[in-house]
Image 1 (spheres, rainbow, N blue to C red):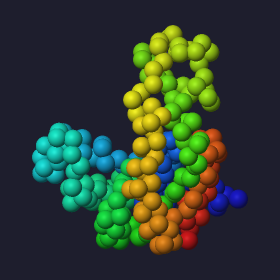
Image 2 (image 1 turned 60 degrees about the vertical axis):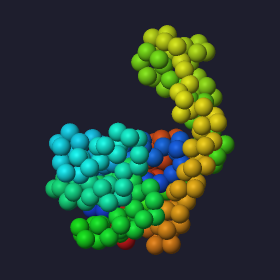
Image 3 (image 1 turned 90 degrees about the vertical axis):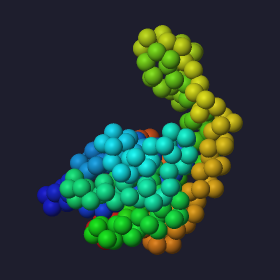
Image 4 (image 1 turned 135 degrees about the vertical axis):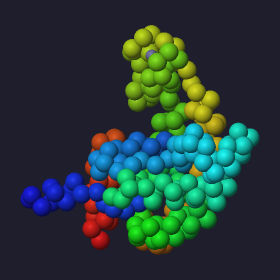
Amino acid sequence: MGSAAAMARTAPQRALIFLGPPGAGKGTQARLIAERYGVPHLSTGDMFRDHVRRDTELGRRARPIMERGELVPDEIVLGMVEERIARPDCRMGFVLDGFPRTLAQAEALDRLLEAHGFGRPVVLHLVADEALLLRRLAGRRTCKLCGAVYNIYDRPPQVPGRCDLDGGELVERPDDREEVVRQRLASYHRQTRPLVDYYRARGVLVDVDGTADIEAVSRQVVALVERAAAS
Ligand SMILES: [Zn+2]
């Protein structure tokens, strides 16, 4: 099946959007699919830093807001996204990570994608149950010395509390404390569920089983993207 193999390597020329709760592996899957197709993996955090570094007009407007730790207004975020997706390296498609976050952003993004000839996005919704996410996130321990990540349930170190690589102390990052994880999950449901409903109603959302291991999830994502891009 030479033609199928050739098709598998063809970038989808679409916007790929990942939605899913913290701990479902969005960032990892976004990076893997971007590498597979050789398309840019775009995060709004990187875009902000790039604009601030280049001292663009958008960067000059965003900087004081970011420094105050406030949310950058949609108008500025969308300006950055539009400027970024218009660049030649996005011609064959791109992957969005951490954007859109609100319904208003999703609607505005749809208009941008149409205007720039990308058509409808492919939205990959990583689904995993709460108990599994809690275990993944609240079980996480990080080496103070080298940053290696362990999980006391799924990937324990050989010696409890010590890094296998350098013996460094393993600590729980503030973000990974169970109480904080529960809050992050609740805030995800509040903010992101409307996006899931919106994209599902538009018929562009596909559910991905986020409970499997990274490689199995990645194979599912590739198959779904190829099916969606061919339709
Ligand atoms: Zn270490």
